Structures are given as structure tokens and as C-alpha cells.
Length: 418
Image (cartoon, rainbow, N blue to C red; front, side, top):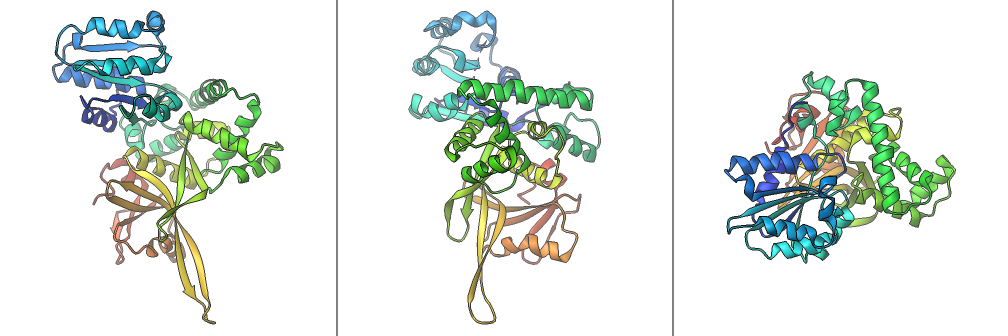
């Protein structure tokens, strides 16, 4: 398989070089964290002229390094390799396997010529808790499965064919190595059951496997839908014939988020400028795993497209919310009537913001009016974009609303900036 360059993540690592923090690469299992660290970032360091003796690479899931998992062994080993005052780059893969890894890295940070980069698969260790463990000295770089543009860089077929394969089988890099549709489906089903779900069950001591399987299936069948733990609890009763309390559902959702299998998008009131506590939307970080959860039976391209747009915005470094806009209008009797319209995504990055609608088709005037309605109700001057499934030429209407095709949006890194 040809090499896939993950330039956006390499840049994020390079931008953090020698910043005095532990660079922590997190993300769903099998999404390419180890390859980013041990191959792409390593090659980048070599291209800068860094000598191999100053790049210390250790894979802690390698049985040859088993002795380094013992207390203080990893620290002693690394310090023994630091022999001069030049900068040493420490690349540690699956660092959470080491005994007292937080203490080890805290100790190494005291050395003035150490620059540390680590990977891990558990956000409890490497995202939430690391802030506490390192007293603000952990710097997270989250990596997602392949984006559509990364996928197409090695696909070899047409863009429409690539789109169909991508929204069906997702962006886990090893999917590309599978030669047939059957092999791809079997790989994804096996990974979901034997790696992702089993890992979540073991890590969180979940006793009722059928319950976590059911919540994954229900979430998979309702991507892009507003929901909350109570609503999901009711769905268990009506669909899966399972009685699961909403508090238990909430716990399961947090487990799935911690494993990076799903992402939660909060709901934001644009006019009220406040977050609403409930309901929220949940998106899968990989569509192949989502489809595997449903046995590849339920593939509504419109909802999948929305999920892909969410992932692309997240990959580009945006904080993404789902929005609601209030529109008040008086009826013929003079009574004020309030209507609420959804904005699919509010994407924030620094001082910049974009409002984005995912519209599978806008082939009638009624549909165009419907998709633009919520955007028309927003009175600020941030850019408003509608992404449609059709491969259309980019255009801007008299109100400043931009419409573009999904291929244009995904394949051009700067598609939102023009």
C-alpha cells in the first residue's frame, strides 16, 4: 500500500516542537497514531538533519521492551541514552502501558534537552487525566481516521467511486489493504467486535455486553438525530426490548466517547448565545465501523454525508456545535409565533466562525428555501455555507450564502476560505 501523508497532523506536531510540553497523540485504535509518530514524524526529524542517536523510539507494546514497563525502568533507560546537551527527541508508542507513565514523563520533562512525543489509545489516561497528571504540561494532538482527501490520495479510482467506497467502508488505513468488499466488511466487523467493543467492555468492567452492543446499534441507526440518555433509554425498551436506566446509558455514552468511537456535538442557541444542556447529536469517528454495527444494511447517504462533514470540520481544527435559530413572526391576528430552525454545524476556530448546512439535494425552490431558512435567520456576518451532494460549481447568492458540492468541500483544504 502506498504511503499516506498525514500532513495536517505532521504540521501540528511540528508546530509544537520543543514547546516544553509532552505532545500526546490520541485517537481511535487503528487510525494511524503509531505510523504518524514512528514513520511520518521520524522522517520529518531525519529530513531536518537530526541524527538517529538523538531520536529515541520505543514501542511499549513490543514484547522486546517488556522490561521497560517495570517501575523506573523506562526512565533509567531513556536517561542512559542522553549523552550530550543537544536536543533528544523521545518517541514513545502506547505509553499508557508503562508503570507510572505520568511520573516518568514528569521526571523527563525536568531535563532541559528533552522533547517528548507519545501515543496512547485511552482518553481517560491521555486526554482528560493528563491535564491533572502533568499540571497543564500535556499537549494533545488528536488524530482521526483518513479524511476523504487522504483516502483519495491513494485510492486510484474515480472520485465518485471513491466516495461510495469511503462512505461505506470508512477511513481506517488497513481497510485499503483489503482486496474485496467481503474482506473489507469482515475486517470492519471483526475490528468492531474484537478490538473496539471488547476493549471498552474490559476497560470499564461492563457486565452486560448486549447492552453496549445495543446502544452502538441504536446510535449508528440515528446519526445526525438529536437525542439524550432518557430518549435512548426509551429506545432500548421499544426497539431492543431492554430496560436500561438513563444513568446507565449516560455511562455507556461516556465510555464510547472515551474510546473515541463516537463524538458528541453540543447544541448551541445562536441568538441566545448559550449552550442547551440537551438534546445533543452523536457522530461516529469512522463510518466503516458505524456501518459494521448495522451489518452494512442501513446506509442512508444523506445522514452519512452529514457525519463526514462533521469529521472534516473537526479534522481541520474547528470546535463543532449543532445550532438552533429562533425566528419570531406575527400571524394575521397579531400574535407572535416562534419557530426554531436547525443549523447543522457551527464551526469555531479562534475568532472565526462558519455556519454550515448539509443538504443532500436542493433540486427544488422549496428545498432551497428550506435549507437557507435557518441561515437567513442569523444576523451576524460570519460566512454561511451549504454543502450539497451534487458535484456542482461553487456559487454565492445575493444574500452571501455559498453553495458548493461535497467533493469540492472535502478535497480542497481551503474550500471554506474563498
